[in-house]
Image 1 (spheres, one colour):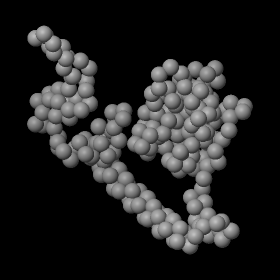
Image 2 (cartoon, helix red, strand yellow; image 1 turned 90 degrees about the horizontal axis):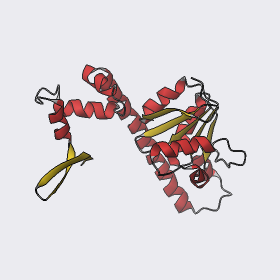
Image 3 (cartoon, helix red, strand yellow; image 1 turned 180 degrees about the vertical axis):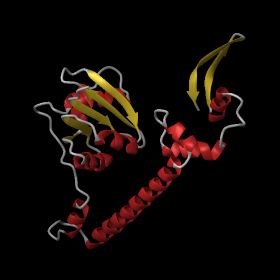
Image 4 (cartoon, one colour; image 1 turned 90 degrees about the vertical axis):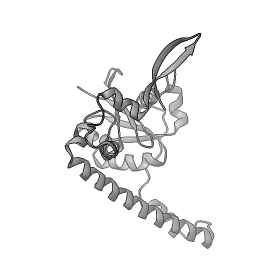
Length: 224
């Protein structure tokens, strides 16, 4: 399969990817966690990858660039005209892929990790010492929190890799190490559930109900 352009719609925990071929046809539609996305893109052969510019896009953009990809960030308002019909995450990702190589598209430079400290150390920037001190403290806290998140993610990943039940769960699209380890921690081997439907009810994945005139009608699954 030959890929030409990829659009990635970034979320807090879920990332939607759409890939187009040279004819502009959608040939890949996938949903990932962040770690799954970056594992998928390591060996991806594609001409250009696009994302909307936001806080998380710069980190993902740096990682993709380090993997050897041509990564371009775009302001959201310039992507919006390419959104077709109703809005959802895959449609947004497709619009990003459509827009990424337009001749007059404007791009946002990917920020490096060192740019905020450079601002704080630049004496020519009009900024009070109080504000500099507060920003420096926030930057220190951000770095510490980032390191803690990385350590926790690695611990959870190791725990998931060591458990066969977690590995089976992670084979299901959309389930990563956090969800897998949480489920195993909550129900063990699941022996108390007689059937899969009982487990779905325990999760809260049950049909919605619409009853009128004494007639009961079950609707689609409701994620309460």
